[in-house]
Image 1 (tube, chains in turn orange, purple, green):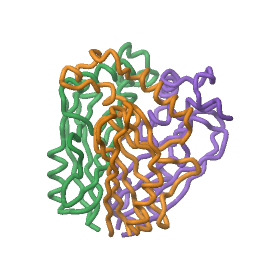
Image 2 (cartoon, one colour):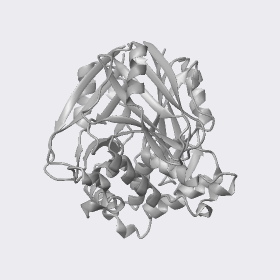
Image 3 (cartoon, chains in turn brown, yellow, orange):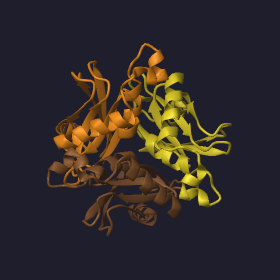
Image 4 (cartoon, chains in turn green, purple, red):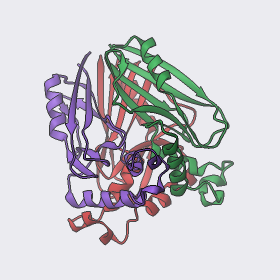
Length: 139
Length: 139
Length: 139
C-alpha cells in the first residue's frame, strides 16, 4: 500500500467564497502514482468546507444566500460563540451544512467522477490563511 | 491491497425519493472478497445523495417535507441556478443537507453496521438516469 | 495493509449533548500501530453523529439552539415517524445536518489535524446506550 500527502493553502479575500480545486486534487493523484485507492480531501480549519457540486456561478450565489438564511452572520450577538474574541459563529454552522471533507475513489490513476462532479474549497470566515489536506492511499 | 468497483444505475420516476440499497452494497462487498477495509458509496450526480438512516416510511415523509421547507422547489425563480436551462436549484441544496457519500467499515467480509443502519440512494431531481459508485479497498 | 477496529460506548444523560472523543480516537490510532492510512469514525446509531469542530462551550450551545430551530423536538406530533413507538423524529433530522461520520488522515502514526480540529460524538436522542465505531486501515 502506498500513501501520499499534500497541503493546499488559501487566503480568500472575502468572508465567504468557493474555489474549484478539482485540477489540484487530480494533480495530487497523478503525483501519488496511486492507480486504485481512496482520496480524502478535508478542510483543516473548522470554519471551512470541502464539498463536491456544480461549477455554476448562479448556484454558488444560491448557496451563499441560503447559508446566510440558515445561519445569518448578523447580528453577531446572536451566537454565544461570539462572546469569545471571535465573530465567526455563523461560519461554524455553515460549515456543518456543507461538510468538512469528501472521499473520492481513485480508479486507473484518476478521480472516479460522474459527469458534473467538481471539488470546491468553501470558505466561511476568510481573510486569513487556511489549509486543505489531501491524503491518498492505495496501490 | 485489493480494490473493487461497481456502479448502480437508477431512474427514479418522481422528483424526490429514497431507495434502500443496503443489500446491493452488501452484495458488492461479497463479490469483492475483501474481508477488512473501507467501502465508499457515493452519488455520481450532484442532485442526489447517498446516506445512512432508518428504513421507516414515516421518517422518509418527514425528510421530504423538511427538505422542501429548507429548500423549496417553487417558485423556481427563487434560484439563480434556474436561469440556466435547469429547474433543479433546490435539488443541489437538498443534496448538501443529506450528503454525497458514506464510508462504511468492512469487517470479516461484511458491512460493519449498528442495529438500524441502512444505506439509501436519495434522489432530488429524478426522471433521468443516475449512477452510484461503490469502491471498496482492503485485504 | 493492516486494519484495526474498536468500539466506544456512550450513555448520555440528556437528550442532546456533545462529547469530545479526540483523545480516545488518538489512542486507537496508537494501539493500531498504523503509521500511514485513513481512520473512519462513525456513529453506529441513526440518531447520533460524529463530527469535527471546535471545543468551545458557547459554540455547542449555539449548535443546540440552531438544530432545535431547524428540527424542533416538539410538538412530537410534527413528525410522522413519531406515529411509531418513537418520539425522536427530530433526532433523525438533526443527525443529517451534523453528519454520521468523519474520515481522518493518519500521518506518522497520528491524526493529521489542523490547529483547532477536535472530534465529537453528537447525541440527539440520549438516555440509552449507543456505540461509535473506529476503523483504521493503512500500513
